[in-house]
Image 1 (tube, rainbow, N blue to C red):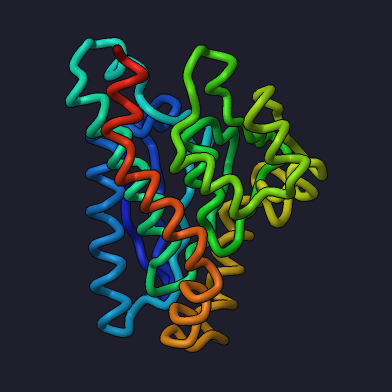
Image 2 (spheres, helix red, strand yellow):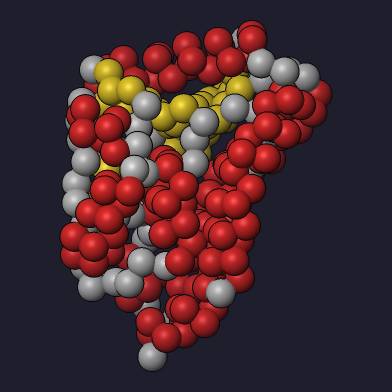
Length: 237
């Protein structure tokens, strides 16, 4: 199992669970996109008006599947990277509000995906980190632009340059999360927020307004995606 989809009273919940740390492998990305395809169809049909993206009981997501990078298959590594950032862009521009339920740590691409939500609920067990420089990787431009959109300038600087870890109130202050609740309350709180949005927002106005507000960041992320092949080629050469 990688991603499940369920609807209750106009709120769709997509739950990530690979039985481990929800690595954003090509298979996991495909499962998430399939779930968002269904959510988009349900939004168009009027049966869904908000989406919750949740981790399993252990973690939101630990980021990309590192074994794909280690395999030596450059095309697979590039494809996984591009797919992750295209997914982030999809969430940023999704035609209904997306609420993130970070049931545990969100690391690297997991943390970037967390940042794309319209509301982000974290757990007291959550920690948020772009750990690339700690493991010998240069952060892709698309990831930098996602962080630039949502983090405060001091938090952005620390996240990028020293792989700073943010948790609790510090995560809220930095811009990684909008609220922190007890671990067992994360999913319920995210669904509560989703239900509130479903009941109160005009989805056409919601989409048009958030895209207008985010357009500079969206364009910068897309430029990062467009330049990713060259970036990745340099990183593996």
